[in-house]
Structures are given as structure tokens and as C-alpha cells.
Image (cartoon, rainbow, N blue to C red; front, side, top):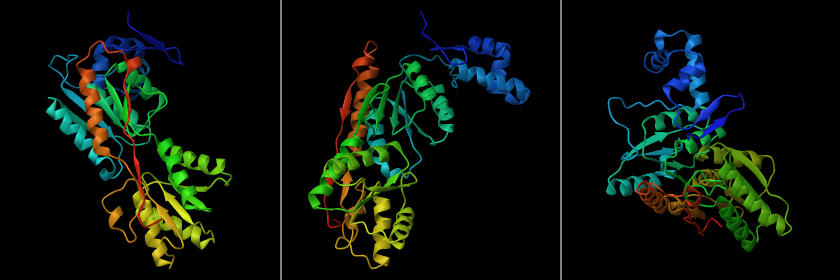
Amino acid sequence: MTEARTRGDGTRRRAGATLTDVAKAARVSTATVSRALNTPNLLTKETLGRVHEAIAATGYIPALTTGTVITNRSRLVAIMAPPTPLELFDATVRSAVAALDEGGYQTLLGIYSRDATRDKIVTQILSRRPGGLILIGLPVSPDVRDLLVESRLPIVETWEMPLAPIDMVAGISHHDIGIAIGRFLLRKGYRRPMIFSTDSSRGHIRRYGISRVLMEAGQPEPRSIDQGLPGTVGEGRRSFAKIWGEGERPDVVVCASDWLAQGVMIEAAARGVRVPEDLAVVGFGDFDFARELEPALTTVRIDGAAMGKQAAALMLDAMQDDRRDRSKAARVDVGFSLVERAST
């Protein structure tokens, strides 16, 4: 029996929806649905809109590969990454691709945006009928999550440890990272910390962990300023210039990326603020330049290559097991390390 779900508007949404289901929901013929997908210029705007609404309502995924037989043994694995500078996730992507290639699988890389168009991109990826999907830090909306669950594909989430995973996880706990940074600040004796976070769930979770530790130790909640994702050198400079110009004097700035931290250090030097004597700086990422800065940057190191390799290993195992129990899917915490250098 096919699993079905009822949406809020009463439309029945089910796994494996067909062209006929879409035609019925849109009150058109299957030929009209086919034209909407292949030659939309032949339809009126009103008809095209009805068809696309029906596609969204039923959860139908059009196959973009024609003339071939789609099987459950697809040798294609899709990897979806956010449009941040590639250095952040490069090691994860490269190691996952290498491990999957060694296992006999091809990869398809998709770049998603943080706005609503990510729903469309996910649908486009699934339309290629991949055998599995690796998500790199993907913040999914409820509709996208439903679509991914209904696809029944093996899915590995990385760079996160979500409380309610879609399927498998090979990631890191941003809450634990925040706790570790908070304890580090206490150990070093900082009393006026400030957080340059990013407008993302990961940045907010780390900020919560830091604040929790400091407040439990009797300190006030540190002020936090959100930056764009992933946080640039320029944003770090401008944010530090603003708070310093307004008379705020933190003794340590914790940054959500090494780029932000570099910007803080550049602006501090321009203003005659000594690091670490007058101001300590902590980054995130441990990129190649972090150890080359003067002074060298204290930061959080993530083994992206190990994460990609683990994600690929989970995927390869899952794609060989047609009867696996998703409720018992693996959750692997790859871990992190806090690298103390001269900036603190």
C-alpha cells in the first residue's frame, strides 16, 4: 500500500506520485502536464501555474532522464553544498567524491541558496534519480524535509548533528563546540567577551553554548552581533570598527569564521589595538592562513576530510543494504579540536 499524507489544503501527497496524480490535481490531461514540464511556452500562464501547484501539492518528482530505465541501483550520488567560499567545505566534498569514486559511484554536485529557491534545487537534484544524497549543512524547510523523507533515498547529513535527522549523520556538534569555547574563555580569565556570530543555525547554536557556560559561571550573557554567512574579512573589520568607535571594549572577540577573525585583527592593528595584549581573538575553521597570521590565530579545527570520508562510508554501506532500518541509521560525531595560538 502506498504511503500518503494529507497537506493542510486537503491535497493528498504521497511517495511515488505519478503524472496521472498531477493531472488529476490540476484538472488537466497528462499531456498538458508533460507540456508544462517540457514545452511550457505552449501553455497559458494560468494553466502552467495550476500544474506547478499540483506538482508541489502531490510531491511529484519528474524524471529528467528519458529513454532509460531508472532502477534502485543508481550509481549516482548527489552532494548538495551551500554557496559559501569553497574552502569551508572543500575537504569534505573532495574526500567524499574520492571515496565514492573508489566504490564505483559517480557524484553530482549541487549548490543551493538559503532562500526559497533551495526547494526548487532539491527537486531538480532528485529529478536525476540519484541513488543517494549527501547534504552539507543544508537548512531544510518542512516541505523539503517531507520531500527527502518521501524519496526513501539513503541520505547523509554532514556539518551538523541535528536533533531529528532525516536519515544518517556524519557531522559535528556545534553546541559542544560552543561549550568548549565557553570553558576556554573561563580558563583564560576573560570577563568582557563579545561574539561575532553568523545568521545561521550553526552560528546561533555555538553562541548558545558559549553563553550557557558563561552564564552558569555567573557572568552576564555576552553581546552578539550577527554577520552574513559565512562572515567575511570586510564584515569583521566593519563590525569591530563600529563597536570600538562606539566605546565598547571587549577583552576577547569570538568569531564564527577565520575570515571574520582576520578582519577583526586587521582593523585592530589599524587602530593601534594590540592582539592579544589589549584584545584576544578566536576564529573558526583553522584555514591555512590562520597559523600564518601575526599573531597566529586561536581557532576551532574541523577535520572536513574525515567527515567526507565517513559520510561516503555510510552512504556506500546503505546503498548495499536494501532492507536497512532507517530508525537505526548511524549517527557519527566526527569531533573537533580547539587550537590555541598566540591571538589569545
